[in-house]
Length: 273
Length: 326
Image (tube, rainbow over all chains, first blue to last red; front, side):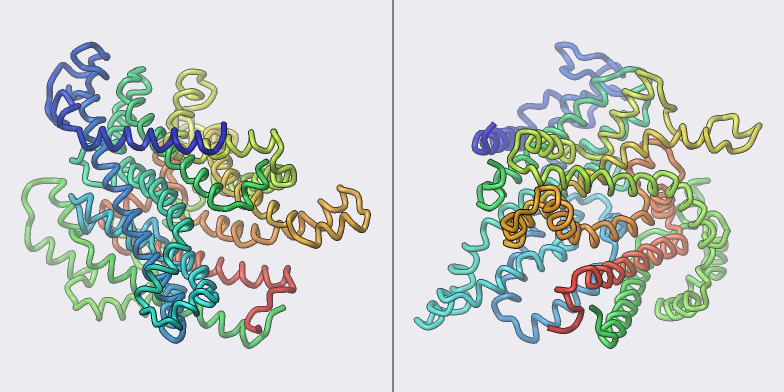
């Protein structure tokens, strides 16, 4: 399969997920937490994917759960990449003592283990998915700043930046019109891979039960099914749908990330064929 | 090579980073909403006797101002006194060590095998990059890595433990432990499935870095030179390409070895393995502050130590990198 087809397929899958999340109230036949049938019903025409142990419709939960999971994954990725891009460009462009100080601070912050700290911080903002994704985005940006700063630093030394300066372009204009476009490939790839990373991490956090247990999302659905004995009872419709939903979007994002990386990085491409 | 003065500065710097880390985590943990005694009492009944709460606060010094608690904490840490867990009533350090041993049973072999397998596969794949076999392996690895760890674990439990019944469903020992004590073979039998899973996760991560590093190295001029000298491919691979491609792996593997200390909460949850990852989540939900602080302290110590060790190792192995000097 060529890179282009792969990229298109993954983008199409992503659009499908977005459509489901946006149109959730129209697609889902029941509410996410409404008890609408007998417990543990196998799939039939009334309940497309059956019901769980308290009689909630699994298909509806799956559809509504996509909202939480997608908001979390993409919000935190957007925030983290925006912060690291802005900070990286400013540091790389101005350099000097500010750059020096910020890099020292980053050096100190880097070794703090992010994952456990994140788990602690989620307890501060218990019910809010958006708040948790803000925390995640801010923490996640620490590692990205250096990634953007290095190429920004070398771009700032190039003749065309010097040229822009000499015709009197403002710093803001140089950074937004001349440096940023040249960094877009890195930023795009970083955004896609970060979305995948955060999305999976969000589902994982929810799976180990460190999220508000009242929100319905794929992680808590898997957790319910797993601890409720879906495996030993052979209730595949309870545990498989949320898991496959995560696998689907994670795969689509991962493949999109690799395809983009290859199309932006000619050296990788040469080595592939 | 390492400049002695720079090394000293670097060590001092790591010490500072450690101090900042510990301070930040202390305040974040103490600001955490909810506390142990309230959670615990409310789980027993609906009433919350004021005197009991007050006594608990007084006993653990939680009634003092935060900065005073902080100073006492730092003083105790410097004395090697890590405090007592609220929920277990035991000293924190031995408690962490006990759980850590269980995590090590899985993670130590997994990380070792994972590093070796990842490097071998990555080197092979990078050396033959562009070939059909390389592409097949590469695509397989992308797919493998894109699927979350806990989902692989659940599927593994389903297939190998439920359907095929080759392995136990979880836990670390059979019920016979009550009669005959802990049997190493029994523990191994319980650990095989999680070890295999962890090995594959570690291996895929290393595979990417090794493959990319190998691809970068075989594009270098000195490889062309080696070939132009008339060396056979074997010598080029073993003496020129592999040694240089392994350099980025030093940093990565050092961090992986240090990361063992955190356990793997997903694997431990799915397999009900009593490791450090589960201890962390339990301590969090119970708001067991001394235990959490102990775990974070150990994490920070290992991560900062790994950074230092990796830097020193790399500068020894690669004479082109001089620590400190330009």
